[in-house]
Length: 328
Image (tube, rainbow, N blue to C red; front, side, top):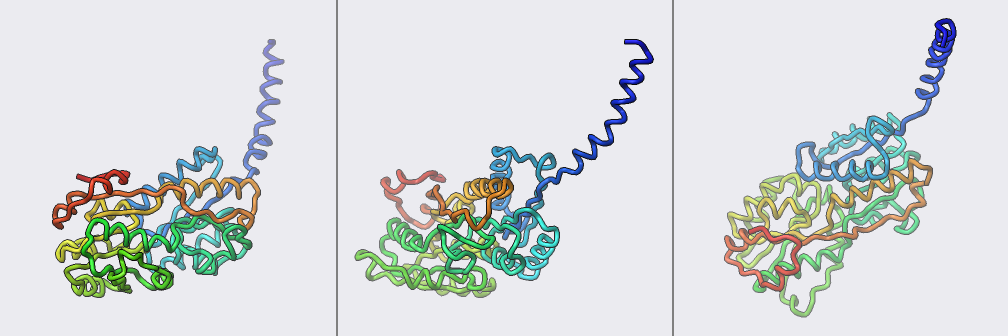
């Protein structure tokens, strides 16, 4: 190619660069706001964020390439929740992912137009987040945590390991998990549990937690409820339970890894990974209200034999065979 012709070609290419850049820059990159109802340094939230990112990546959404995702961590502080929700809504994201009941409640009040996908939220119909599971309507859908029947399963597991239990106490914060009183009222003990007393221990402060555990009888067990407040103070609960030799069951793996006797519940990381599928569908044009709310499809049972030994309990081999993991 002659030098004069090369310069003409190069000049034409350079002239076309700005318009090409403008065309690429004019394409809007979707934005997703993720509001987590835990504190930023909590191992539970870290595993959930990792799972959500993997779920998005599997569906072709790469952060800082074709999607913007911002993460905000609220804990259970009502003022912080409201501030983060207000900031997120002002940015007008294409989708909001809301984790925990307090966060979802605040988002629901803040917007009726931005699509919302809740994750790890109990009783979304009873709490008024959606009208029904199959067709949520409005701008909200998502993935629930578990149904009220879980209370009976926790009770059954504790009594299986310690048959002489006379009382089981369910500890929760009525501000962050208001649905547990209704769950307790619906509990129907089996014939084998007819002499068992199931009590509630509503707590809002650490002194109330200590008082509730200290007041437990020798034959008592404790259910540490699936509740963002209970997650936050789990170290204090587990420490006090060890002091008073109280067997504890929870829905979360983190509890049994840190000192409870057993955990049984949905895999929250898997729920967050599934949440990405609804974010994907909404970003591709589907309406949140047309997507049915979904229940967990993967549960895990973990037993801590070190804790059982410390409590003087012998766990039956048949029970251990059901466990997904045994900590020895």
